[in-house]
Structure formats: C-alpha cells, structure tokens
Image (cartoon, rainbow, N blue to C red; front, top):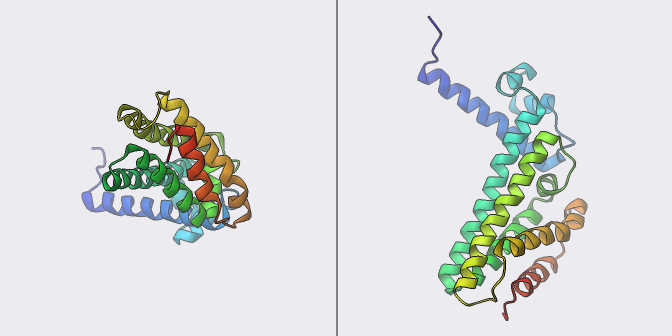
Length: 203
C-alpha cells in the first residue's frame, strides 16, 4: 500500500516550505541573489542542507519560487494602489501614476531585494520568472491605460506598448540608485512626470 501523508504531516511540510522561502527572501533582501546559497538558506531556516533539497531540487527551483512570490506581491501592491487612486480621484490616469509611484517607492525602500528582482544576474531558470514579472506589471498598467483611453483622458494609443515602455523606464531609472542602495528623492516625482507625458496626459 502506498504511503499517504496525513493532514498533520502535510501541514508541517507546508509550514517548513514556507519557512525556507521566507528565509530565502530575507537573505536576498540583505545580500542579493549572489549572496545566497542553499546552505545559507538552510542556516537561516535552522535546518540541514538536505532538508532544503527535499523541498527544492536546486537553487534555481527555490529562487524561481521566491521570485514568483515576491514579484506577485509587488505587482499586487502596485495594482491595489492604482485602484485606490482611481476610486479616490475618479480618473483612470491616476491609477497608472499611483501604480508607478507605489512600485518605485517600495523598490527604493528595499534596494537590495529590488535590484535582485530587476537586474542582478541570476540563473536562467530564475530569469524566466523575472520576464514573467515584467510582463505581468506591463499588463496591469496596460489595463489602466486602456481604461484612460476609453474614458477620453488620454489620446488613442497601444496600451501594451506604452505600458512596456513605462516598465522599462522604471527599471532604467532605478538601476543606479538601487545598486548604490541610496534613494534620490527626485526620482519618484520625475518618474511620475515621465509617466504622464508618456501617456499624453495634460496633468
């Protein structure tokens, strides 16, 4: 008869997996991707290296999961901020600006983690997740941009292309501050101005 895990055993395994992921996120936030290893994650979680390998086949698999979780969290925060701004101001353009501002603010508050998510050299397996992250952020902005076009707030345009350009600009504008670990107070207002001009919005 095949062994079947009891709910209690599965719950413990799931909890340990979560602990390993949280430990990896903490390490990246402090040391970047290059400063992380399976052994470092194990030590951070207080378990043996073999325990990590029972949950993840290799570093790439572990950090692919880490990037998926963190990237999803960042996009969700940006979208929620945009929705709140749209509700408060009654303008779709406000959603785009708020999403861009929130993403940049969160990145500058956690520069080492943001640098790892955006530009630090990573394993190919992890880089695939990074591309999906950029795509999901682009798609989220494109929805708000398309709504702004529909509402007559901005000129007719390809929402996906504009969104991709904005996502690219955010990354380029943040690379040096994130690499230096020092926030420049002028970056976010400049990004917001750039965003509005990219959209063709008068304000």
